[in-house]
Length: 274
Image 1: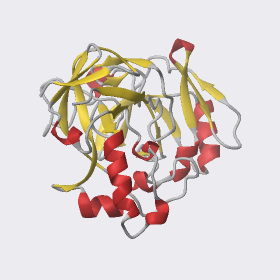
Image 2: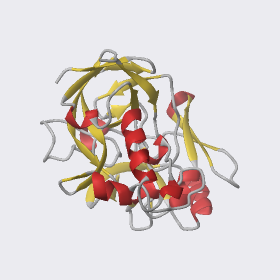
Image 3: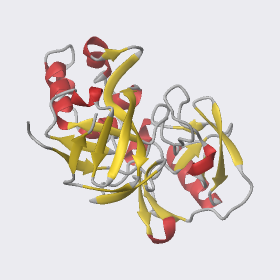
């Protein structure tokens, strides 16, 4: 059996915006360090994503010293955003549930509003340790998550992407394939596995960190958005609906929760413990 290794790591500082691919990153209880600690909200306080604004794919955020982030987008001047000072908490709505955040400086609101063409604000999750629990249907006591969709990390494998692309090539929209991995916005990409092996991973170790597999990752319309053009198609959802329906989910990848913290690096061996 070939060994499994980390092929890539991805951190997305702002939810639904392009991120970075570090060579190593610290694992925190609620996810990779710096991942999805910021989000955009509309005038009603609802978090917005590529589901509503596919052009968010073309914006990018990267960490800069001091905990700040730098944001860029087509036609916009680069902006550095400071972590907000402790202050009044602003409840926002993420998938129907309230999460308390801190609002970033007005310059960030102006910048993103100009780019998206509607009034929005940038908010920061100041304390992930207490603000948002993992879905109680799949969580253990005390587990929390950042502003990710629902779980601290998403892991995918190159073999599963190859298998999916083979199915797309045989399907109704072959012209849309092959799809790149960035359609799925994972945190950890693994090489050396067999296709769909991650479905059965109950407990894995990467470097000195250990994770439990919570459940499959159900996919949404964001996966149909070309992350380089913001154009939408039909795939991979059409193919996932035919071949990868697990319960109510159109599944690709596995959602993880850290159980032992540490640092993960590109090239690390991935060990399946259960």
